[in-house]
Image (cartoon, rainbow, N blue to C red; front, side, top):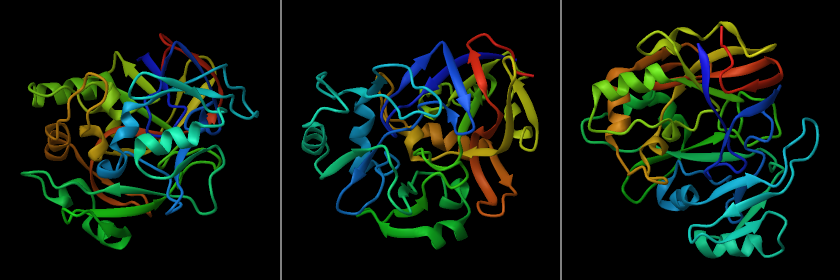
Length: 297
């Protein structure tokens, strides 16, 4: 297996950077999700997983002004707005500019608030039951409010299974294989299963066919020269994978296809149950530098 692509997302839920090389530490790719947009009224960390409120975040992109350094504060980022204009994260009018576009009072932050939360919509998709996406009991236990469509919105801890300090949803690393994406394309050739929909840190090529990473949780594997990943549990998929971004159209069939063809029993004590999955989460057990083309064994 080899690394086909590396990605870093400086601002949570904005488009990120495609990298040729990346440094990993115990918190994942250095600089990944170091910034987030904070909703001032609710104190919730904004996430495009609630499309009606935050889908516009996927029309922004962010890139660092300099390479992040392990153990140091993240450098400023340049944010490209939907209209093509740019502002730096240290511009004094940035928060107002973001507020004007997003339609809610927001701040760009690098330090998570106390007990940070993000929200996730449990989307209604024709032909898919909510229980096809996630355990019904977990949805009921975590529902904090409802969309005006009646769809449930859950509230979760930010970075629940990752070291603190970055704005992950759950884990520090997300890996997906080209074989999983190719299998989804075979199952639904009318849809575009581009890796960008899944916001991975690492895309792997030259694997066996099929949903190969389903079998990786519990294994430690080498990435490049000296980096080691410990795979934890499969990546649960949500409405965000269906949303439009760049040249990719909105397509709920992408999530329907995962739910119908790759529901996995996750045995984690908190998120255990049947989930629609594509990809796998990991912890970094030994850090270092990796590059596109490096081996994964």
